[in-house]
Structures are given as C-alpha cells and as structure tokens.
Length: 340
Ligand SMILES: [Zn+2]
Image (cartoon, rainbow, N blue to C red):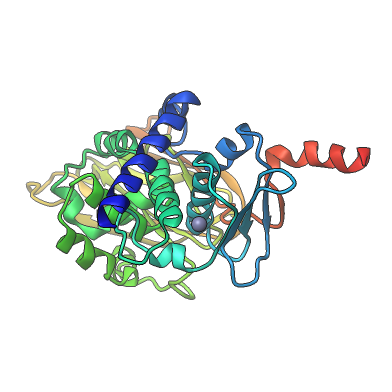
C-alpha cells in the first residue's frame, strides 16, 4: 500500500508540472509577482470557481452538471489558495467529486499514512507541487540570496511561504520533498509556534492578535515586488542606512488609509565596522483591504533633492477572497444568468 502512495504522489507531482508547462505558467510567474495564480489556472481550464460560506468544509469539487470548484470564504488567503489547488488537483487528475474538510490542512503533503484515501493523497501532493514547484523555490532563493542551509531557519521558511502564497506548514513539507532538509527537521519546524517568529520580527510591537496577522520582513531584495497580504498584516521594512554620511530613510509615499507606520528603530548592521551603515527598521501596519505602493527615499535632510537611494514595494492587502464568483468569471456568469 505504501508503494501505491509513493507512486500516487509521484504521478500527482508530475501532472502538476505538466499542467504548468502546458499553460506557460512559469514565464508568467517569474515576470509577475513570484507566485502561481491558482484561481486564474482554474478559470483558464473553463472550470467555474466560486467562493462561498461552506459549513464545516474548506472546499469542494463537483462534476454535475459540469465540473466546478467551491472554496470557503471563512479562511485566510493562504488556506483558500491551498484549498483551490487541492480542488484543481481533483479536477485535473479526473477524480470523483470530493467534499474537503479540515483534514486537508492537517495532512502533511507528500506524507501519506496507512489508511489515507489515495485520491486525497494525490490531490494533496498535486496542490503543494502546483503552488510551490521546484523552479519557484529556486527563483525566490536566487532573488533573496537564500541557500538550502539558510532554509533551516523557520523565520526564512515563513517569509518564503508568504511570498509564494501558501501556508507555512505546507511550505515546510514541500521543502522536505525537495530534500532541503530531512523528515525530523520538517517535523520539528512544522510543530513550531509561528507567533514566536512574528514576535521576534516585531521587536516589541504587539498587534491586536497574532492569529490573523502575517508579519513580512521586507528588505532590498524585495524591491519592486508585489506583496499579497491581508488587511491586518504588518510590514517590517529593514534597509541599510548610511547615517554616518548623514543619509536617513524617509517614507516618501504612503497611503494612510491602507498603511500606518507604527514603529521606527535602528540597529547596528551585523559585522560592520564603526561608521558603517546601520539598519533602519520601519514597521507599517495594514488598515484596510487596499492595494498600492510604499515608497521610501534615503536622503540628507539638508539636501532633500538628491536621494542616495530609493526603495519601493507594491502591496495588495485584499487578503481572503469574499463571497462570489472568481472575479475573472463574474461577467460570464452574470451573462449566463441573464440569458437563462
Ligand atoms: Zn480532496
């Protein structure tokens, strides 16, 4: 039976790779925001995708009268995406209809246990491989200058998970699948309390609660990236500051209704000599489901016209999808309803 699981996982992973190749997804992702758009994929396959309240379920795949996918509105963005990728797996692998509850999150992808349903093991592996394929891991590691050894740090795995838009735990098990670390390390990492990682990043700042909030560590490596977060997320922008030469980072443009600066600090850059750059840490907290750009400039207060450096990131704080058809399908379904 375990041999069946191993081959099911292999098949599902291959099918995820094949679908990405057939749809040219890699080129889109690496020229876009660095994450796989699973909703767009479902729409491109002509499968209706609806977000709605599902009592006791995270998602569902149905085949009658025609195939379709439902995803709960009651979960954060990463879990909605993970559920959608799982349902896409059911569709693409030709599975029978499926009603999926919490257990799809509890089950570790690629880690089947005796008694697990083969179809569920396949959908799980497909979903994880689809959201975080090896080439996407490599792309982020190159951009961020992370090595496999660096990824033994749960704080970095968490930052990777935010950027690829999947849950921390699924990311841990996918990295294990790619042999970044062994099973014992994966277990240890998956059991870690993320709240501690968030607290360390925030250096004393306390949001109302930690559960629905993600904390992004934003560095020079994220320049011009689009960060997809939630309406309560926090961004700790950490940039080297040449204060010895009189240059200081200033927030140049911020949408006050989307983000508010809640903390501002400096720390000595590690291993730097005296007089070298310090690190500036500006913490901004989301206020609303809005999208925009955060722009900073490093300049001398007495020479404001000549910045030494500028830094910008785009953000979308839309978070979880709300009730309704997936946005790219709304028009079509409205027409269908009007025609009926
Ligand atoms: Zn399922």
